[in-house]
Image (cartoon, rainbow over all chains, first blue to last red; front, side, top):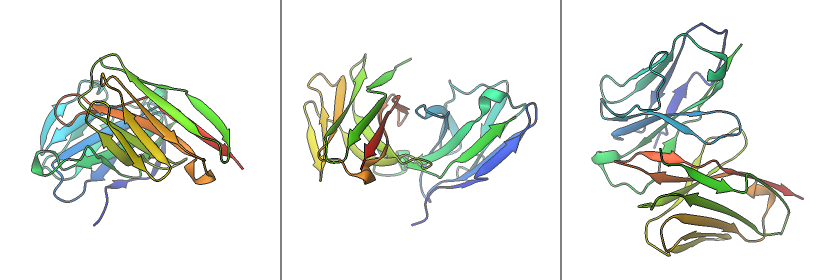
Length: 117
Length: 110
């Protein structure tokens, strides 16, 4: 079974530029998450989707971050304009959600490492 | 918002020594999960605990959920170099929403 796919793996941009990350969850998983992990810290939830609807985006800095999951499958996370403090690994995760049996496990992708100069 | 604190933040042990990390919440948890993240890798699920006082074992790893469901621990017996990484607890808050702890970074000296 294919895992969670993310791209790009690495991205270096200058502050005030824009960047987009893409995630394809495990097939059939209804719930998709974007986490931000700053070096040395735990993953911080940015946004949670159930199918194509937003369940929670309370921690998403909406003045610069946006995310969508238009068809309830893959998702994009965009940052515009980027700031130095956005340097982090952006982790996408998925789980069956309401579509199946949940064991509490989130399946993570390899992450997209962003460096803002 | 709900915070989940882990102690210690770092732990260096000699290979063969035991290791324990603790996860503490200010509120009662419905369940708790544990993850391991290798350096440069992504979090990998280890286990979920749901019952008060629950104890589960996976080879050299022992997981425990407190009686009051406000704390949990992960104990590794006789650490090996393959145990190196950061161990995170997480808890659900709302419908399939998971909040991660601060993590404990384990270094094993050969």
